[in-house]
Length: 318
Image (cartoon, rainbow, N blue to C red; front, side, top):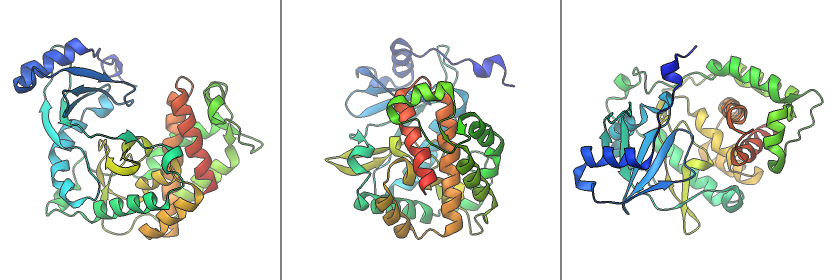
């Protein structure tokens, strides 16, 4: 069980962020701060002037992101076909705030939505090309980096207990999936909204297919709709590399189920050249992460309820 100190989330407000920025980055002390709302579940995000953003972890699970991105994103950026964040500095704890935090260049754009790009095979192929480029990135120090705790990809089996518990919590016995987006928050509170037998069958299959038996490759690790930006209706950037690591690329297939329709998903898979085993493991990752978010947030956040309901439903379609 986590200690009280690790469970306690620090209070973050504009006054705190102002003091941190002014003390540690005096060159930006005159720039205005504006809270970005809604932000993600892992960070509180402020816009700093016109060209910068400030990201402060909300909880212990996100505290390694600032230094990881500062180390790796400048190396990755020249090799990738879409823009990614450019770190501008890493802040240190201060004024009661306990963890490292980040300043990055601001990326203009709108968060990708299902309504805008779900049916776009062109966008699906662009995302496949991004992942292909990421997987091909191979700096000379990858062998050493692959042994680092912060970059080591965890096997899907590590999620077995939590995923089966989530299936038991929200799975129906009849196999009829309810929980449409508009009512998913209520359904999350009352339980039983997805086909329990189908989820169990998929999960068993994902754990039983052969694992990744080729050299480990880079993965984004949290490759879903909320971490993609568009500009002028086209994909423009990929953000939030907190789960960046080296291992099985199957975990980045989650985007096929958070964003794409059946047709664009087929184009995505073809462009990536994904074999059956990797695709099944990818469905397993999408199921596990979707269930985790659904259990954690759907009862109180209608936006997450809608997103994760779609993700789990599309995973079961395949």
